[in-house]
Image 1 (cartoon, rainbow over the protein chains, first blue to last red):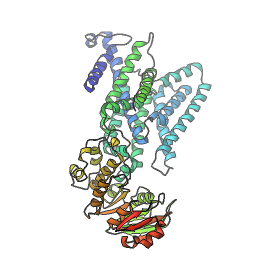
Image 2 (tube, helix red, strand yellow):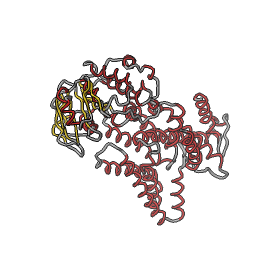
Image 3 (spheres, helix red, strand yellow):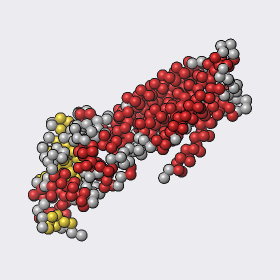
Length: 312
Length: 230
């Protein structure tokens, strides 16, 4: 089963760059003069890599948040990191700074994290439920602000904001890819470095403390670094939901191993999942691509409900 | 020396005692504050009133505390769904040369080694917890109701292990099993409504007169056994 999955994943990644509005052929992509060459190296390949890395980051971020918050439903989006990015993007669009959208989105997530940490540094207990609740409250607050921005924006601005919230993997050249590569390294390095602490946290907070972990500090470091990584992600692709929720769940059911042993599989299959969703998004629409967030949710939501019903 | 000095919180009032190279048993009715006391002693509840070798526990780093303090809860609660007994025990192995298989064999639970911790019965998980305490081998180990779910044979086995001086250095055992407490013969601290009502030797605690005062006549000493009259 696992081998079959790896095999299928390789096929998906292998064929993904060749299908889309223009189907490419393998021979032509190496001919410098052909359009196929241009499309493959400048548009398709960066896009596939971007999709793969984004999927991997979001899936791993989901795993970390679920471990830290003791809640299988939590993802970075639950804490308002993505809503912060969306709000600031909307602000950039309305203020006319369209060239700086990514920067604003990144700022939005960072400011959200800082607000969260300022509020929670006032909390005494090591239980993170309060942090989760603050995150949820912040999300609602951001939604309200976003509504205000919608209200004062004109039609084309509103349209642009809506498009951002649907997520998009459109990219040209490798600039975005480099940012995403940095973001992936950041999240992978921090998780691998804290692997032992994560395993202890997977037992219980008290157990981890008795075995020498400064639980509060560890949780904060993990959340902070992961949030930065997700912030970079969201600033480039917009919010793409569901991956952080379903990929860790599926892999835990499949592998039946403790979460900290699944770091690389979760990154890999998170990536493959988004490449697959993107492949579908690029091929199902008649005139243009379907927004990626729509595909992940269409595939993810029913499958997730099935998973919950299937487990006893 | 582990010392608690004049500690009070929402449930405990003016708790002071010290443990110096010995074992201790903490008794008390449900809700008296025993587990809270255990968590305060082990540093899980932060406080300025606990001292280890005259050093404030809150000033000792978490990493250094591992060799000094350990708390064993009455139940094994694990968040992750797929952690095996062996994996769990591996996480407790740092101040000892003891071998996991050897400890499991001593406790007659070698067959549980590969089993998922979530699939253990309450008694089995208690034995796994005791194994984890032995592997961790801290200077002070607080065992919170370590025998509450064991069958008679297992209870006998654990009693024998706890009575040995070389299983764990300083044991602080919270229990409701009065006969176990009596037979172990360790010093007794009895807690009622968050206060220490008795602090002394086993011999002085288990006299019929004292038992009558403390347990309102429900506990009898019959032929060198402590029996609850029901």
